Image 1 (cartoon, rainbow, N blue to C red):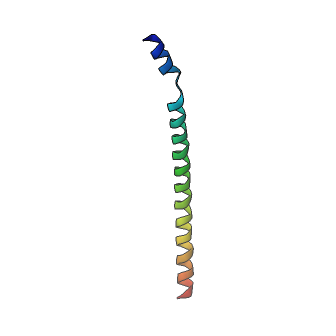
Image 2: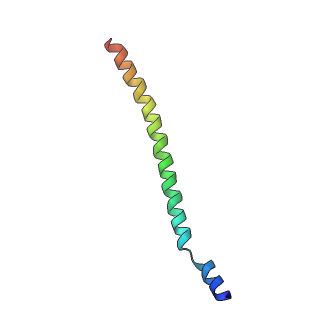
Image 3: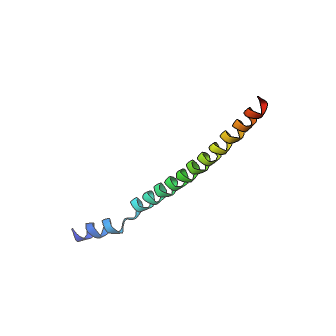
Length: 54
């Protein structure tokens, strides 16, 4: 029983999967933040151009 417990505690495959998941989530949050920032700037630009054309 003790050997099984030590093997379970020594297994790090799940930790690696969790680390990759956290990295992917961080990248997704960064992409969302950039897209939102660019989206508002583009909206302002297109509104300005639209107003100038009227």
